[in-house]
Image (cartoon, rainbow, N blue to C red; front, side):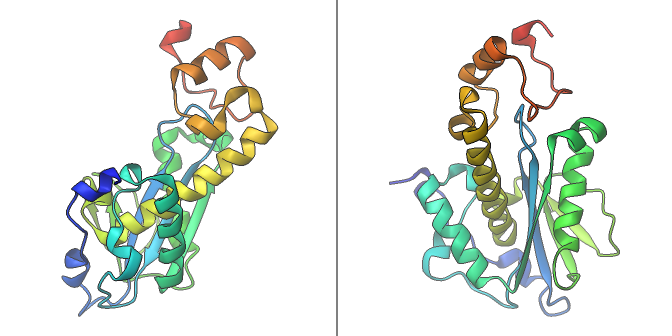
Length: 212
């Protein structure tokens, strides 16, 4: 039984507060702020108005606590169920140029812009958002474990980024990107110490373990 089984099922209680006046509610989340390599990926998800979770989506929760196989199935279900969704990828070179916070904000805004239609209201994971869009928003600390639309975006962002990192693992097998997905594990730090950084590494991220 997965860890997510110990958490209360998510409902669309937060979305329901706004659906009467704002039919297009969009959840936004990102994946990949902490890794030493690879992109930051954001997703935006607009559910059908007055949607109530059913089927496998009753198991939806914060993507970090869901086992990979279930997470992949949930991502497919979100795509099938959503009225609209968008995914944005910001590469490591842009992260180094902007810094990770600004790159994450850019990814979130681009995910929304990629939707077929601008939503009426944004629900954003975290405690800070810098919008580049004329759309009202609200931030939710730990929103991916509280707000259904944000959890849906969390799953799309996480699965999209994991697929990218698995592809990178084929190009640079010595780093084990398919195992740690670029996060600073002991094995990853040891690989950097042995082989140096590859073109996918974020040069602006320094490692105390390497005396940086």
